[in-house]
Length: 418
Image 1 (cartoon, rainbow, N blue to C red):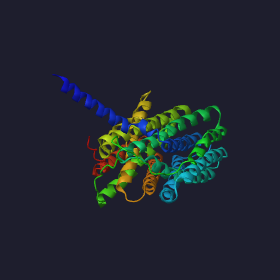
Image 2: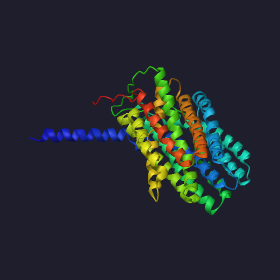
Image 3: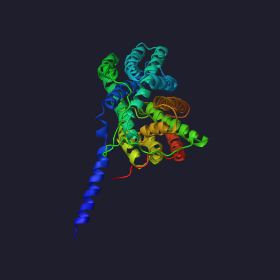
C-alpha cells in the first residue's frame, strides 16, 4: 500500500545524490589542469599578500607615511591591472602554458627583491621591485582563471571558486607566515619562502589550455541554455561599478587592517598578521561556498546580499575590543569572498570575446580599482583617521550591492530530468 510512497522517496534521494555528485567540488578536483593552476595561484598570492605586512614592519625604520604604504601596495596592483587584458589576449591566442609558469617565477623573484630593498631602506627601489612583480601577476591571473573555468557551463562558478580558494589559502598563510618570519628569523628568510614555489612553476609548464568536454549521465554532451542578454549602458555601468566597488572594499580593508591594529591598538606583528590572515581565511571560505551556491541559487542574488551584509561589520570594526576583531575579520572576509569568483563568471558570461580576454579585463579592473580605492582610504587615514577610513568601506560595499541588483540573470536553466 505504501510502496509508491517509498519508491518516490527513493527516486528523489537518488536524484539529489546524482545532482550533488555531478556538481560537487570533488568531481572538479579530479581535473589536473584545475589543480595545477590553483596551486600556482596559492604560491603567487602567498608571496603577494606578505607585502602589506612587510611594509608595516619597515614603516617605522623607513619613516613611511600611510599614504606611502598605500602607494606601494597599489603600485603592484596597478601594473598588474594595466597588463592583464593584454596577457588574457595572449593566452587566448597563443596558449597559457608559459604565461602561467613564467608569471609565477617572476613574482617569486621580485617579491623577494622587494624585501631586500626594504632592508636597504630604499623606498624608491622597493617601488621598482613591486612594479616588476606586478608584471608576473598580470601574466599569471588571466590564464589561471581561463583554465579554471574550462568546464561545463553549469559548473564554471564552482571551477572559478576552486581557483580563487587556493589563492585565498595563500593569502591566509602569507601575512601570518610573514609575521612569524619577521619576528623570529628576520627578512633574510623570505627567499626560502619563494623557493618553495619552484616545483609548482615546473608543473605549470606542463599544462596548456585545452577544451574540456563533459557529459551528462545519459552520455550526451551538456550544453545548458543561457539567457540572451543585450548589453545596455545601464548593465555595463552596473557591471563596472560592481567590479570597482567590490575590489575597493576588499583591498582597502586588507591594506589598512594591519596598520589600524598596530597604531590604534598597539598590537605586534604576529597579532596584526593574524587578524589580516583571518580576513583572508574568511575570504577563502566564502569563495569555496559562493561558487557552488551561485551555480545552484543564482549569481546576482548571492553577490548583492553578501555585500549588503558586509556593511554593519565594517561600521563596527574600529570599535571592537578583545577577541571580537578576530571574529569580525573572519566574518567580513567570508562575506567579501562569497562574491569574488561569481563576479568573474558573470563577466565572462556577459562580455563577448575569449575567456582569457574577459578574465584579463575583469581581474585588471579589480586590481586597478582596488588600488585606486586603497589610495583613497590612505588619504582618508592620513587626513581624518584610520577608523574612519575603515568605516568608509561600509558605504563602498553598499554601492557594490546596489550595482549587483541591476545585472541580468546569467545562471543556466536547469536540464530536464529524464
